Length: 302
Image 1 (cartoon, one colour):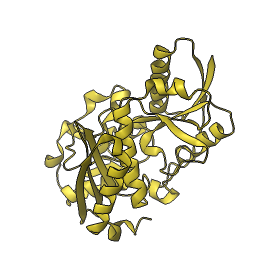
Image 2 (spheres, helix red, strand yellow):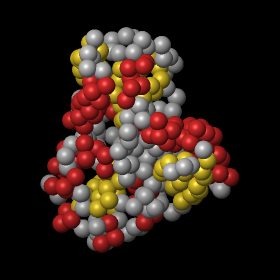
Image 3 (tube, helix red, strand yellow):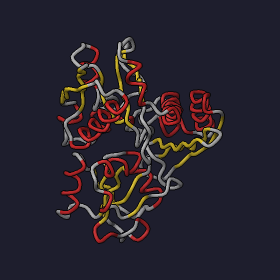
């Protein structure tokens, strides 16, 4: 059996796609793949901050349209890029085991966050990261940076930035863990919803659903769907300053926060419940943030 798999063309996207293909083949040795590289809106517009191009679906829209039209059989996405409202007749059919969701600091001279000199220039394309950086260090300067991981690292090495804040998972998947200066505490830097996870999207009536689900990790999916329920109830997208952290012991625990983009305001909360009630937990967490005044911050971004 040969399946067409759609993905973006960055080294990270290809690495994630190869990872998914290998997982599927381990469970289903008779499957072969053809990779279809599709350029998305987010890949085409690199000189504009993400928040100004419209954050919802800019890295997945063209791939999902190819899926809907039958040009590909499955799409591989970073979970944090998938809008909470997926195109009708498509669904997230599998979430393999999630990587560490934390953010990390990469800095010149390997300096930790607390010891960066005042007025250091820190690069990020994320409003959430900008808000969290400024909440913890109001004396730092934020500068927008776009492009794939290798492009960002090159710009750091060329001296345009003193440090970058990026996702740990992407650096790990590309073998760049050795350049990380510091893993940032989730107490101070709540990750993006879905960060560190890969999602497989397919048509809801795909004949290959059982095959895709052979690599699903139930706990990872429960955590992801809880976070997405939080985000959807708050009305946010990937470029809204909302952070969330989840883990499952016997219960599913969620901590979440909303920030003002200037880092002056932070409203946080935490909830827990049975893992099977992931949707209810996400909504309950969102309602708690709203009750504490989170909407007054978020209305500026929605």
